[in-house]
Structure formats: C-alpha cells, structure tokens
Image 1 (cartoon, one colour):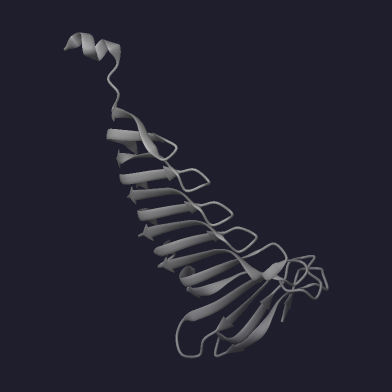
Image 2 (tube, one colour):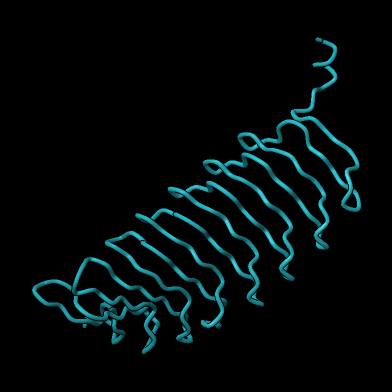
Length: 198
C-alpha cells in the first residue's frame, strides 16, 4: 500500500511477489477516499492485465484488457451511471482499433457501427436512427470515404446514392424524392471555366 505524499489518501494498494504485481491492485485519486478510480487484475499466466475504471459513485465506466501499456481485445464503455447499459464497444490489437467499433444510444439501440483496420476506418460504416432505422451506409479506405454510399431518411426511403473516391464524391450520383430517382449529378462538378476551356 502506498499513500499520496503528506496525505492519508491511499494512492494504490496491492501485492508484489519478487517485484512483480500479482492479483488485484486498486488505484485512487487524491480525493477518492475509499472509492478506487481503477482496478487492475494481473494474470499469473501471462503479461495481460484486466483493467476496470470507475466513476466517483463506484459505477463501472469502462473495462478491458491491457498488455503492457497497450489496449488489447474487446473494451467496453458504459452509459453514465448505468454500468448495465453499453455506450460503446471497441476492439484493439496492439493499442490500435481493429474490427468493429459499435456505439449505442441510451435506449440500447445501435447508433453507429464502423469497421477498423490498423487504427483506421477501413471497410463499412452504418449509422442508425434511435428507432433502429438505417440512415447512412458508407465505405472507408484508410480513414477516407471510398466506395459506394447510400443515405436514407428516417422512414427508410433512399435520399442519395453514389461513390466516393479518396474522401470526395466521384462519378454519377443519384438523388431521390419519395424513394424514386429525381436527379443525377456527375462529380467532380465541372466549373464554367472548365467548360469554356473545352
């Protein structure tokens, strides 16, 4: 056990064996009193550590595994003061996002699902309304919009569809009214000066 300097407040408490942490360690803030800010459970079999963070009321705010200083595997984040309701789930490999990141509304419905690779958006992204209706469907490549996309209104009617290339609209886009094609636009849009040069 170790205290903050010139204070009765515990800084951390846990057990060392041969200079190595074993079992559960509790960590406190200068004003934590008896409520730890975090716990770390050290594995006896490998270098992984199960980490749990708490708010001042003792509710779990997030939890996951670390190897050294790096997050690894699934991390869960919870709604404020509601440790039974997820706010977000992330997946890590070597402290970089890898796989699906899912964000939730307070009612438990998914608001966003994004696929990551090596810490960057790489693959599909879905954005939903609070009622569970798909609003936007995008594709990413190395953190930039790249590939087909579709945007819907809250009733599931298509509003626009087209492709992105390196973060910009590219090629023919179709815009809809009442779920029916209404107009098209080709990107990049040529300026008047471009047309005169032709």
